[in-house]
Image 1: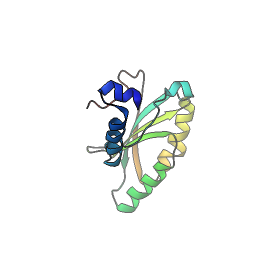
Image 2: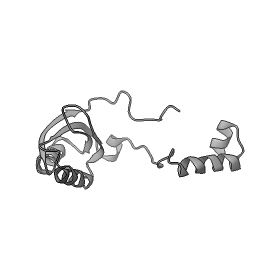
Image 3: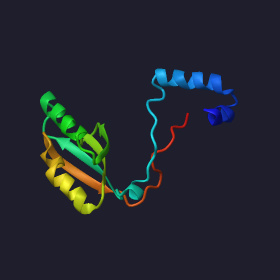
Image 4: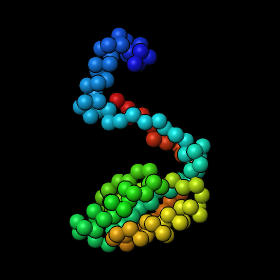
Amino acid sequence: MVALAEQIGLSPTPCQRRVRRLEETGVIARYAAVLEPARVGLPLQAFVLVALSSHAEEVVEGFQKALSARPEVLAAYAMSGEMDYLLHVLATDFEAYADFAMRALLRMPGVKETKSSFVLTALKPPGEIPV
């Protein structure tokens, strides 16, 4: 807090109040450490487009519940367009990814089709939001 206060030209107490207000209003959603996937044993990254066979409530809920239980899925987004979801998946190697895809993802409720693309190089990985 002291370093942040110095950086923005405030004393620590008003800085702490502002940060607390940002947390309470949801501007700051959470705090996290940004890890390098390869350095924690997860060098394979894939982005997977998923199409569901139906958009019936029970199918969507079943898929989302099954998806939330999978630690391989770093992030998931409901999408517009021809595919329904975009997943960011981490794995130890291609064999582990194939196991996840064949034994978990393709068996999730309502999954009709998937398309996987593998990260070769992260040119601009997730970072700070420019505010």
